[in-house]
Image 1 (cartoon, rainbow, N blue to C red):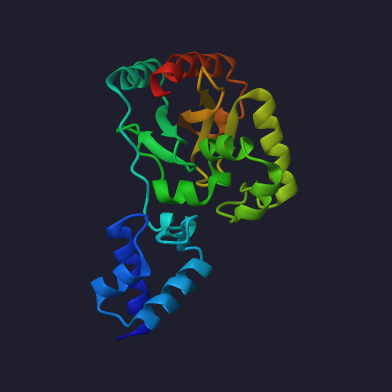
Image 2 (tube, rainbow, N blue to C red):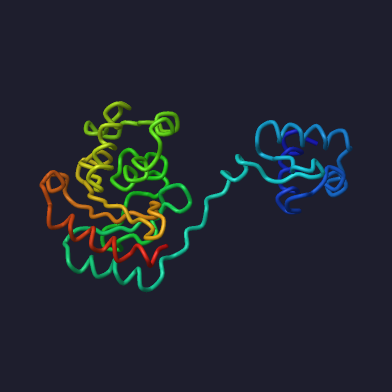
Length: 238
């Protein structure tokens, strides 16, 4: 058999059997020679697709294997969706609710009348969206510098780490993020964080999307309205 196919088969078998499956069990299930099974298991452990359990008697999925699947984002409860709907009725902007509970940006309640940018793009390049900036501002600076690719989408996209760090510092200070034509020239966004009332952990973001020139305005009233609805959402999303 093909070595790559064998390795994928081993990975699938560990996922199906669950934590604690042994090399002997994997070998028997797949009909592979014990020596081949051990070699593939060791390779997958070295690459962090698998981990050895503390007692060294079995294996489980590792950090990199978890990245092979997209976490399912639960739909917000009825009460939370009602808060977002109420905000949509009060403004003439697009209103989107995103969650960060999976460690990445995920759109939980997109505005049906103002479809957001593709979620995978927002998650991959958080530096070009107001919601993504909320998530980045909540992370340690060293992690932000190492983990993010600052791809340019428009002349307004921030592509230098120092410039992004200044922007994120301002986001942290003001508890509001702005995106001014950085992903699409014709679209901008304002976003505020939604934090757990018990722990203060960032759990979601609430965004208004509209023309970039409107984003540059003070928008004091709109931002206050956003914060008010974010505060109402906090206990419903925790």
